[in-house]
Image 1 (cartoon, rainbow, N blue to C red):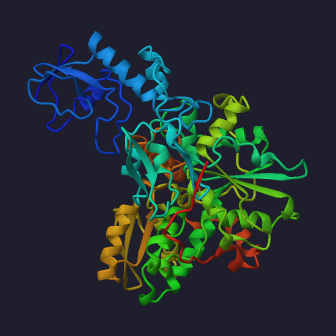
Image 2: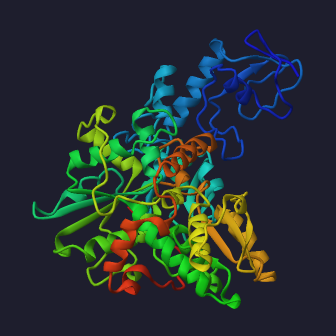
Length: 551
């Protein structure tokens, strides 16, 4: 199939492609705003309009499929005028709060305004009276910024967000009959910055409050060491562990540890718990993702007893840090996370120990990027720092927790070793999506789930056949933590693949791969007396209806 764009013949066009897809592949500029590869095409913003020869009206490039012989013009005076008018209308329903926005810097809306000489305040603000909402004190939604693209409705895994008519406009509203799971995908997919984590950016300095006698300890999640690079213009997939460590020390961290060391604890305990289960107790379901746990507690409480009671890595490590400290009351633990729901997780009373909450603050990767910029940290010139001892020598398998399938693979490799004394060979794990292997004559069947809509389908199968799998890893976000709601924006499949590649390379670079070979982990593990209090928790049924506050 051959089409022509701006007089140039393009002969590698495939049936079903849109004009925008072809143009992007050929490096032909067509501006877009609401278009996102993770969601269905709607052509809502009309910023990508083009002229197609033979068509009376100008068409959205994102929603118009190509055909053989099509001739497209992407720029002319009339197209420029239409785009400018559409942008001015979008700004009339978008309250500008640029300093406090997940898209700052890098806002595409502002870029397009400059590109097309848009008069931002040409039309009256049509959404001035729209409310600011808080979902459980974790996710904030300023509906006065919403441009009605509906991306958030599509990516919300539990259909918590809905669209209602409001006069001649529409309004995104939360459901009155469902709960939010705080995954933050609405944040990642909103082109207008209408969503953010509660207190995002305003709270980046809170961990440093409380007096000079406080010891401030940071711990870094696996996925954060790759995605932080995007905040400072480095190539996708670049591993910046050392620079991130140095940057945190410059802003005031006394110690910087690796959450992956906590993952070695989770791996060990989860493997033990799996081996202790009878066939009636199976399948074992992972619990590292707090959005997934909340999803089960709110919507599928009959499956709560299938979730492993082992705590997530950063919660375990936070508890261990305070347990082994000479003065735990003076220790502030801060987790750098690719995740919004980790902010919710640290508030759960079920996770308290005798020293209180194991983790005091969670900063998303976006927030750490903002923190460094506010402190005028030149990230690119930072030295390659190293994690502090004793919680810096993590295994390679534990680092792979940041990519979907990593938790399951690490735990099952360790369980296999504990049961047989041998390593589970790579050929037994040919497909992380779903694989099986023999362990002492017993067939172990596994499944990896990305996204809660997929979880619903699996639950339906499990209700019919409870013995379908022995071990299941659940992650709310596509790709696992690498696609988390606290990651830099934009996030899409191409970016997730790059993050995953960098993370796996980092994991493979470690001298020690399996948890059982991590001597530093064993030393710490043997020092801990009350393992049940620090490593385990319980889950209970939660209200399926969200608490919503209006500002």
